[in-house]
Image (cartoon, rainbow, N blue to C red):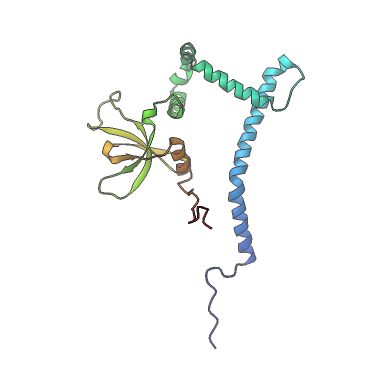
Length: 219
């Protein structure tokens, strides 16, 4: 008598495997929400503490929960308004002297400041473009960000010709590489810098929802 054929394709799942599957699905569903709420909680708690420390001498025991958030938003707006003034920026440059002259601190501070300035609204918008890098003779495509189009202020040694600097971010924000390539190696794409960085951070695993023939989402 022939033995029965083995079950295929998970026709029957063990209870432990089903529990593992449901747990994993629940974890990846709740984890982004939990991390976002946790970071917001840390920010709000820090702002509440700062508001109490600054406003308590002025308002005494009168305090409304949530005043720290209002105080934090107003403080950021005031700082943004002040640094838009030329005189304040000049004073700020003096305050940055310890951070831009100490050996180790200088490298960390300059890197973080340059990275923040790249995404600032007042940055060089013409240089902030997302491109696909294609090497001639290779079918591989790499998404990157153009960070520099001129090398006149850099030292000698770079190859001549019309070239650009392209930053290639690595997945999960563990770093990246900057390559200097000819302009004809890159092709601009219709994508914002923020969207490209967000997609690179998760290794481009997010996919747009599939649309069915009737315009709704496919099952």
